[in-house]
Length: 313
Image (cartoon, rainbow, N blue to C red; front, side):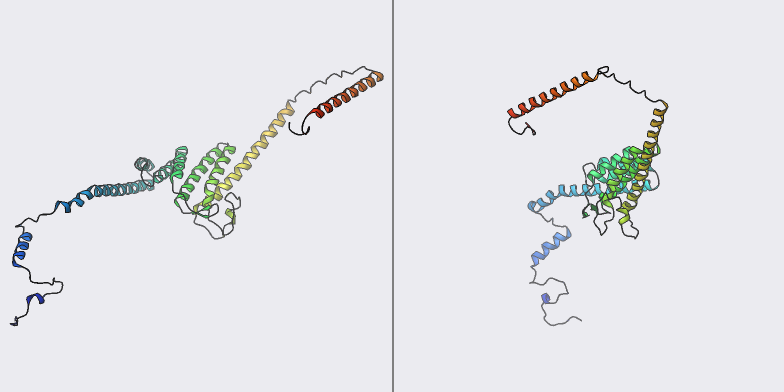
């Protein structure tokens, strides 16, 4: 039941209501008309000006967001096709992404994915070229030790796949009998992947032949460690095969020379044949006199020159 006491209405308010003086009746009426739509509220053009200026910025932000989201979905679709062994479709997707990201952020990703797909299809030359392009564009990893990079960085991911492509090229040459050229590919693959090996406590150079065996005894989940060891073993085997081929060729040449020996040159005639002892003694005396005159002439010329006669002039 309402109280009959004379209590001011402005004091009897629920929690959250605005407190203040009594509202003018005319102002209350105008506000009621505005909220009911009977009267249009006029806005200042100056207040709307920042809104118009922000529209182009908003459009640009939406375009960038749509570009990034669409590129992400496109890349995921190509990855699913790659995982399903549909490499040709995945290759087409990665080629399109390479075009769209040519001037965008992370341009190396499309080259990396395309190169990996081409190597998987045994298109080694094209794949290695794409991986080289990715290596030039990828952000460089930080150096955790002298000659050692962060093993799970973006740069090392590119290095690992590039080294695998070079290794397969070396395998092709080795199987065709060109072991000398295969060694050069194995060496390049080894140099490419060496900086990404797991850094050990002891300092060592990246080209150390025993670096992989000097790691800790526990198994490493770094793919660079296993790949480096495998490539190094193939390189050593190819060098041994190349040396064996060279030895076989030398033996064959020696056998050919023995089967078809070259004739010995005919002896030259002695110009002093037939002279007697007196003539020989006279000839030797004349030769000795000529040598003495030549020495005296050289000594006199050296004495007239400036500087050290035994040095540069």
